[in-house]
Image 1 (cartoon, one colour):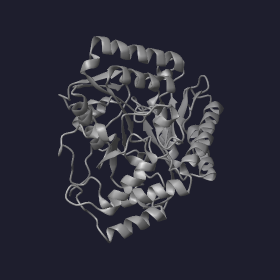
Image 2 (image 1 turned 45 degrees about the vertical axis):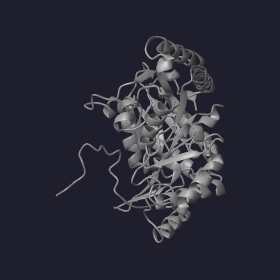
Image 3 (image 1 turned 90 degrees about the vertical axis):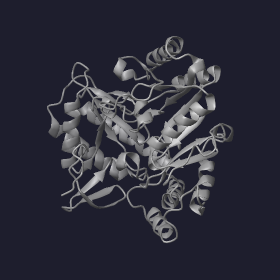
Length: 428
């Protein structure tokens, strides 16, 4: 009998029968509060009525209209709608299916537009699992192990991960920018460098936000040396961080923006956005794909954008995110747990450490598994899997935040003894 690959590692044992909003029901009838949102995908919650209606209506008209063969109205309307929320310079769009595909497209365009071969990525970044994207991914060796040789021309610079270095944010940022300059002086000359590629908040790398000084430093160097700044907003886009785009927290605009996940509330669709001038640097016919810009996915994206606007979900993400972060800090303080609470909006991480400050993946796993027993679904991230990740739908309300915090508090209490030391640092 055919079965799923054993290489797929399940975060929870739940087999879902139905879901609505933030509630997931297993086949055994048990209810869970979902604080994973499919790794940040179901931005409007599971099966939002407006999204379901749009999908059903479009499926009755046209399911697949391959977009270099024919155009369809949902695709054209989505271009117009995205133009209203994207930075003013980034109005030329290419659609694909996944974040990996869109990142591969951005990489290709950077090389085509600049005539330069090399790119610089940042330690802890996750950009996908396909060859080019995996070559740019440094959040964990599991995305690269046994996959050599990977693509050449990728150079890695530090990200200002203050908690990991044991520094404050200013010290970590100064170090990261100094090392970037040293990399440009010793490994990849500016005239050989096509782009800097960065997440505004490290996702798989542990939910570590960038900061204004760091990203403005990247922007200044890109302008000075003539290479491009690419923002991977696959996870941070569409309101997740309490702003529509993650980079908006930092006063910096990219040359290329890549987004996916929260755009459709659950269907495969990604986008690369840039200027008309930059997009035109790609040879005609070099972009394409069978399923990109799928009509049903585009209809779902339009409905998702409507819901985000009408229900004011970006503001809700900021408000509920603050309450959730405050609650995480209280739990950490009540249990005297070593760690770091950080994030932006509804993209929050709680890094657990031992008493001597070392990463504690065993503690994170115990808490995550105990949370399932308390009816709360969470995921784990970070390079050594010691970060609890909280990614509820943007529709989460105050009662659900409180319910999740109570469940997590019980899970922490049950999972004790945990390492004890100083209280969690505040970085959110």
